[in-house]
Length: 206
Image (tube, rainbow, N blue to C red; front, side, top):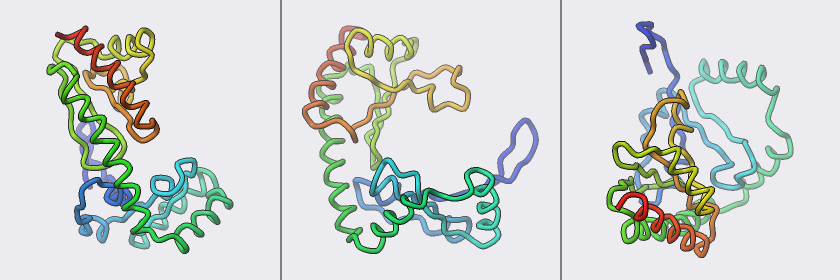
């Protein structure tokens, strides 16, 4: 891709992250056009074991050559044990069945969390219902201090949410959003945490 930074035109590599398609809660066809032209990045950590930071890239040879140099400068090569385990997963596991199982688990967790937002949160909070992934992105109304909201949630209500400015290029930029995670908590923890957050949002905003 091409991007402009302070008036300077730079060429930026474009890579499609394939496991995002595989983790979708609704079935969509992957966009193969980008993959053929630039490359596909597949991370084993996202579909097999979160502790692994192992994956592979499928891309045209000139791009691969540049990636190899970057990788060697960074850490020489990936963890050997993680590569062996990843190879075993890729060659012995029924991935379609595995992905379907993951989708079913995360779809139910996502629906559960969204149901609490719909029924219990202050209507001043807006959110984007995920089509996949592991997170829900919520936005506070204009004039609301997001950092104060997140701090209050942790210190007074004992529920952790991730401040939206953590995902900005510059963390000191203003953000009114926060992120919720439904991958790790159990259904019982989601229910308890969302009940507390719902009460907090109503007390603060309504």
